[in-house]
Length: 512
Image (cartoon, rainbow, N blue to C red; front, top):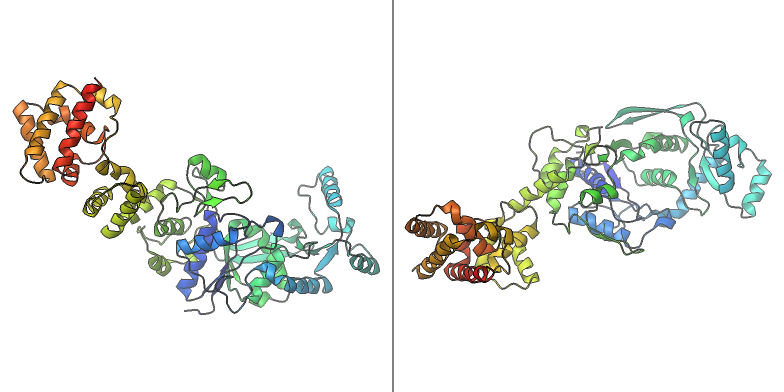
């Protein structure tokens, strides 16, 4: 095992953690555990204007719920603390200054109005990609176009400025990505990114490179959206003299909309009626509440298994993996380049499989919690029987209650459409006789016993079971479809069965 593997997940506390972020964290975690390495979480909060209260706590809770364990973080500490970039502010200017002193970065004093005028000028000149680059920088107000004494005077007087990287005019920048292979970008296509903002805080570009170096990060596993920034990061490693220590990069494929047309967004998820955040999120500003996978009833191990397969394949037909099995099977080489469609039906399938694998005791407890919540009286043994009866068709834990309530609560109303079609004198006769037979039975009915008893009543009246079965169901459940009726009779017992049948006879007669 390579004990030197150090990976990091570096979210920004700007709101709820997107499900794509959970996948990035998961891949980092799987790789770290597979290689015997270290999993680090670093909060990238350099943009204080976008900081959202509660977001950091949300990230911590979401990862813990998913079973992604951290070796080093703001909460666990570690040898490279602090793990919040806002607390590392003092170190960034030192490296930015080094870049300026060695001619690889420069001070820029341009106002927002001047920057906008530059872009409009370039647009008018039909420049395809108007940006602050090797050509346009020589027409702007910066330390490359001003005398040194003027630059010093402006800085001394407190005039706002930023520090920009000085991208070489003609250079091929190469990056060997572990997922995509060699990526080559010509420097002429890049702009001179801001490294230090006017408020003294670094941008992502400088901060993540400095921190990755200082924290001895060996592999940067992150989303495809960061691939266009990677050449800038490669240049920074080169300019700072850290080329030998540059981590290996792996840019993950996009998670696509269900139709495969573009990157999955919160709006797409809302339109298709599924969550996009691991946990429920309440916006502290507007109070908007957005559903989470946890609150919708997804089990963490099911969601983790589903997310692992959004871009990665084990190379076999096997689909169900526990976290330890994922760790054992995982490799960066088996992550694809192409984006992966977000198939919510597949996520539901995973949830159903994992729910079925829960122990009888766990399933019973899940149902009992919902019975207690809904203030329903029940015998523990009945709750157990109902949970096991429903488990094969339940997709979410709440389905145990949704489909199981009918075992505990008598119908308050009866499906009118079914009653209109199936409730008639013949059905009423059979149900009345069946109620008598159930009531007079000397022993508790099993499913088989209930079936035989109903068949005796049908044979006596020369009626086929198909003619009255839906009416019997209506009488017991109030619905036209649902659980296996004979099993239900065994679970709810003779007395309750007979009373439900008689109540239906009375109610449906009264209603005509």
